[in-house]
Amino acid sequence: MHKPYLIDGLKFDMRIYVLVYGVDPLRVFVFREGLARFATEEYVGPYRNNLDNLYMHLTNYAINKNSENFEANEDSGDDDVGHKRSVSSVLKIIEDNEKKNGITMAKLWAQIDDIAVKTLISAQPQLCHSFRSLQPDDLENSMCFEVLGIDIFLDEKVKPWLIEVNSLASFATDSPLDKKIKYDVIYETIAMLNLN
Image (cartoon, rainbow, N blue to C red; front, side):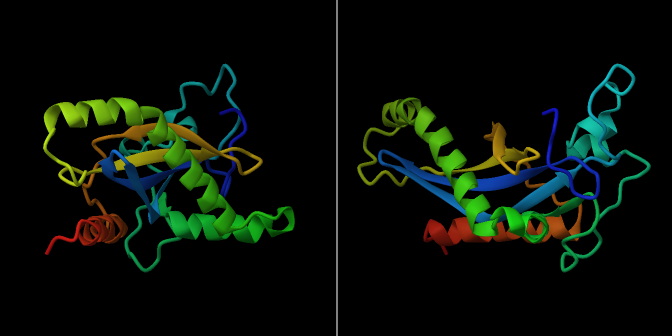
């Protein structure tokens, strides 16, 4: 994306967790928290001399954690500092910065929900076929579930764009913030599944 939305001059993406709990009918739940992953060098649009600067152009945590500029989040209560932050803290910054343009957290979440649902609707026929082939006796549509990681970028006009869907989203916890958010995702998943 040539003109991404920047915070502190840095490019970032957002990992949103989505529970798929049934495919026929499709049942989708979008968690209201996630992780924002930041590049570690200030963004300058791509040109010949900076194309190989991975710390500027990529927001991938596995790459940026090796940067000498990487700032780890050491306290889950301080979720708005470092190069990995909570999605809610990032959306709050955007809401504060873009109030004059009518951008709110509620509006952004509605757009993210729309992306998640439409993405899964596009895959629903294949998901349903695979599920029915493997579980023909599951009349309640509740035998299987999956937590997906949907990665979202925002452009300069604060429009969300889908980057990718991860069917095996990492639940590794390298920081207290990781642990808090991923614990909450797992806890809420178990609650939604009505497990004890």
